[in-house]
Length: 370
Image (cartoon, rainbow, N blue to C red; front, side, top):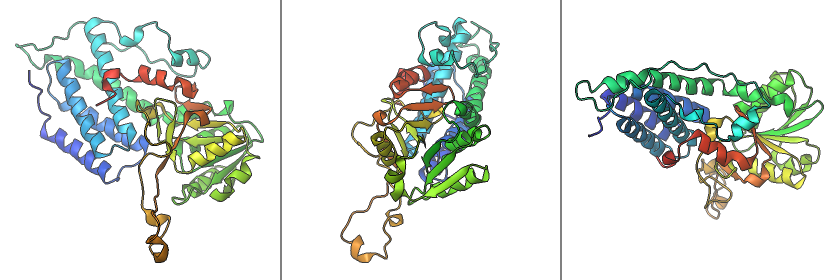
């Protein structure tokens, strides 16, 4: 049976988001994930399908279109994969009466959460089990009509998780930050900002923020932390290694967490993590689980091949130098897993070695390639 084509309003919504992603009018992992989820909700609510295969094909097509528009925003593909995972779970629950997640197999995240009873257990959803009929010739829309309500509820759960990710990551701040410590961070990360401010309600500590040239996002971070009453010092990037001997902990944000436990993070993160490794200073990363990406950085040892305007590094007024050198301005560094001690997520704390297991629990293997 042929896959029904999305209706014109849905196509316009997808193309509008793809255009914004391509022109970088929407940037940042959380912002792109939220926009992607809203578009997917609209696509599912307005699409016509008579079986599970057609629905998955529609979602995969939308995901492919958005990922092709901006392949460097990994949270777009992650959101599509997570929605597909929830769709299959709800389908199995509605047709067989048993959710996929009801298995009693070993789970790293469940094992970690045994000692962290902070996550609220969602009440069981009420579905009509075993009432869905695919490819019904008498009523082709019966399958979609029966499945869409539970899919909307599942998407709302994912949306709630994205909207509360800062608070859920920050709940664990007191276990990692102690009084009179000196914390080093860099760039402007909303997750790290909320994490540090949450700990400041109960601890007195000092934060050193690197300027993070050429974007100078560290200035915004230092201003936000200072406004929250935290003792904050804005320091130049060149003083990183000299200050590291006095630092108790390095806290970084992440753009994407890869399957091998490494991550893409703002430029300068690799230098900070390497200096911390030389001084045996722990490095922890604050990030929501929506940044988990089933991808590997096999060919580019230090970067993400995503570059900004080189004139921010070397202006065109330096004409004698511009003609003689190649200037690159990478957006992100690739930080290897051996330089990271722990990931602090909205679902607990995890070492880099368990990231691949979390990814297998969060996404389905057939969705690794959209």
